[in-house]
Image (cartoon, rainbow, N blue to C red; front, side, top):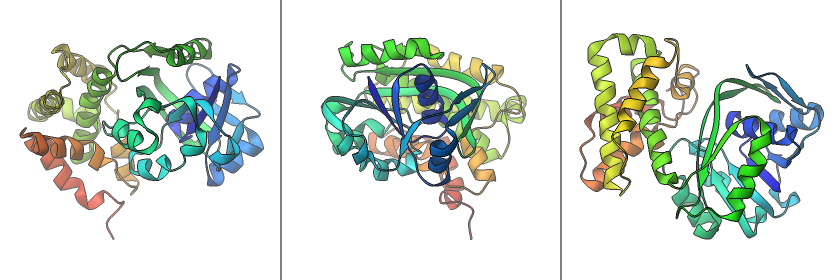
Length: 306
């Protein structure tokens, strides 16, 4: 099996590195200092599960040098989706499947326009991992990939991916209901990112304040209603699972969007709370909390205001 990683940051770098260490043929598509470090020093993963150094990795900035592969992990930041989708055609063969492991719910539609629906599956990732310096990924919590065909079929190509993941040291699930999995994560992520970023607080102060905790829960219900308007019927226990997650995370837990906000970097806001508000408006679903979050944070979407 040949796998190309488009977006070799925290998500792509971590899971791609684990797969490469397990002997899978993986090529990383990267650029700049990160690409130079991968070529010169390989890939290092710092993890509570044990550090890992893949001394030699295949890495390039030009997908045309790779050719057709079996699987593409599409793991770029949401604001880079359209640009990165233009890199895909040289990687696509007759049976190639592109699996987006991104935060939002728009990726399948974008990738379908780029390479055709027959070459797109669904995916989502639960992992806390970032690039700490070029060539180095720091993993701190969770490592679970979930993927599945959009029609629920258990296709040979994704069964082959599941088999490749099993010896790689992380959890992998082949889902029969991948859209439910994507939206279930989106409920958690849209709320966690939006609430921590708009308050400029980690999770602890939010859950200690009854009014903020109620606001968080109401925001989750907004996202669930939007999912339903798109024909994705989320089970009621999604809300309870999210609240269990909120109670179980450490008090200093921050979303990546809050981290980006604090560093003056671009935000994925238009594809998180912004997407909830946008889809809600299209479907006639009221989303006052997510609309407020998207409006208040709008000046920071492209980085720190001048």
